[in-house]
Length: 191
Image (tube, rainbow, N blue to C red; front, side, top):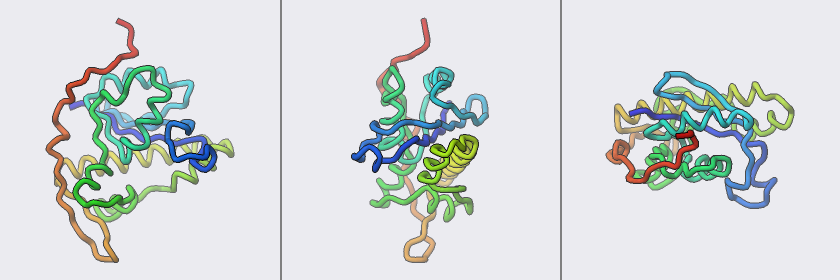
């Protein structure tokens, strides 16, 4: 299966737009890992035309809180329908079993012993200060953490987390990860 792990950083935050609607935010940068090439890359808004063919070739888009945040926001820029690509949202998978949200950082630290390099709000500040390379490095680190977590879950079908200081393991149902979605994607590539 060809998959793309992705993460989005924004130029602004919900407080700036007055509503908790991801589609009202503006993308500063998108980071990806493309399993077809084995490479990490990032894209600013004027480079999105280079990103679309990669996403269109993917069998699945892998993210963390991507169904709620990243995909609705990215769809604002894409002239097709990204909801038609299979989505594997790691946060949603964990939530469906555990019944509560756990941050990427908390799950990655407990499960893999790695952590994020900063917080998304810091990336927004860096963007506003013109520190694009810091945003790029942070975003790609998040993609790497998400990719490693995805690979771990695929292999072990479980993650660890801390609950009141106690390390716990939760088994996850990933049976739907390999199911093909019935919809076909609207492509941006010329035919």
